[in-house]
Image 1: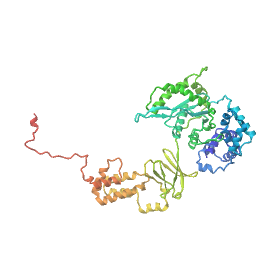
Image 2: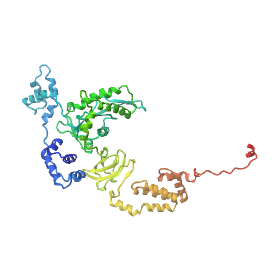
Image 3: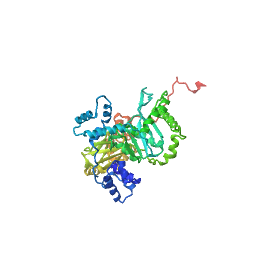
Image 4: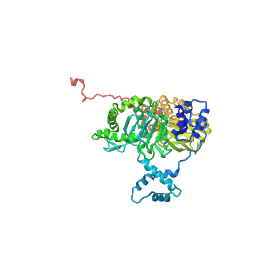
Length: 513
């Protein structure tokens, strides 16, 4: 579905079918089929892109299978550098190398094709190329090979921080940030801050085959990680990756890593930092200085060229920051709930899905439950451990009928409390409001009624009065007060009255004149 949305996204930008095919590395016939179906739908492209995946999927059919690259060459390409080195050794010929190659791959290339591929590799490997970059076309992304450090004031440990380097090749405008780790969570959060630093979004983001960015590397069609695709869709940009082991595919950022050693690393080499924020503040000072430094033999700086030529061509930043969505698999339990293990909180789904495996997609605010492409439940995220978030419509009919037959509702329990006293009403009301699904509080209220019957209305009312100042109340608190007899003790807020008595040894005020 991400590929289909990318086609809609590129069509809304005015891209031709040929450009879309080249951008997505997808066959022309496949693109033609999808574009034809999109045009048949009498909806604007922006409205079509806003449809849920399940509705959007109904409009499309499986496309023509893509032709796979020659697997023989994929294997041979991984060995070309080795063959190039071996040919420099005495006595090693192409005939010898081909014989070894056919022993490894009996159905591999013949001798003539083998020689052609090795010759082509030798010719192209010594060539250099000048790249002409377009303004706003691309940002190149890489990690510096050397980390930076800060000292943890609590443990005294020296923390190693990977350093992210991003550069716009046209202007050379650069962003550098030290990260807490190189994990996806920290990488894509930093890339969001990078886009904010640029003040816009380029058309494409190019990186090497780092595992956080590329899920499956390929010379022809790399498979990007799901989080990477979410990030690109949020920022309305496309993705690309270099060939495996080909750093020259992104020479600008490779060179910028070297420059960052000279202009940032060297400038702060004698400084000690005590937090990551402090380290990045110092990096930012020298980064801004670097961007404002004029090029050699040119009258302008990276900032000048960026502001004048590139910034107006960048796409607008999204209105909301990128929120990372996590995924997890779960099985619907017999109580028609699924468990989000990170919080160990249970969320309800329609009872018809008991025993089935579902996918949880969640962020800091929302938890969604999917069965295939269909969303079967959505809840506001609750961080309370060992608790339940339940929707009544997810319950079986007999469970709903059971609750109705009991006749329990909030008014029932509040009326019971009114017969005892105002403090009992306050405690009952607070317990009912403590649960988002009010039926889950009914058993606690039943327990309160039984405590009032067991200990008497007067003691129960006094126990409720004693519990009211607490920030959170529950059945267990009232029960403990009654068991320990705390309701019989005087209220600490009232000072006891003391009757003073007279005695011949007690001096009066006249003794102090």
